[in-house]
Length: 269
Image (tube, rainbow, N blue to C red):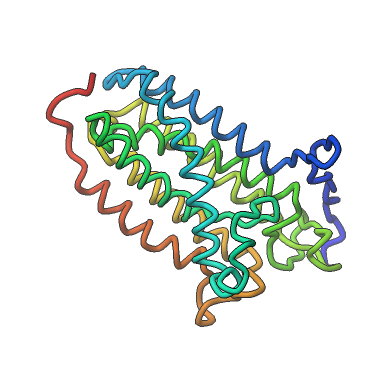
């Protein structure tokens, strides 16, 4: 057993409370992630070779918020606890009790963007590529919020940077939330930034979206080996976690998008 444990910085999940109204770090993470992501989209969309304009992303902001919240919650309900919510349907809207799925939020975002871009008459992947490049910002803050909440912690370990989480029992565990924040957030953001700004990827509609899917899927599959499986699911078939299984289609679809991406015939204006 490691003798060099790092103290878990127990932070109150509630940022501040006024009467019955409590503002949680998790909610703040969503707000900050969406706002910074939107600002980055506006900045990136104004850069050559394709200028999409600020108004497009200003208008999509409300769509994105609804899509992430609705898709993320329904994804959690369907992928992780369908039996529980079938028996307790009134608990489905209780977002304050926790329970969001990235894969569900991604599906919600894609559906919303399909409808939005068709109404606006702009190419779906021209917009999706910009949003994909900004998505790691939200992922980073979301994983930091998981860490503050002491949830989604890792498996037991004796590495020097192990931590004892309040809800994880007396033994030290991997701080897997920080692994995910680093890989899904920082590393993936840097990779997508370099590709978006220093290559012709934005003229090859779908390439950046595919690269994001591949990068996220690989990061999630890797970190899941260090993350404690959901107690009510465990390792499905004794082989893989739900997060890994949901990431495999993302990986394959992302590779397909990258392989088929071709330069757009005309620039978007």
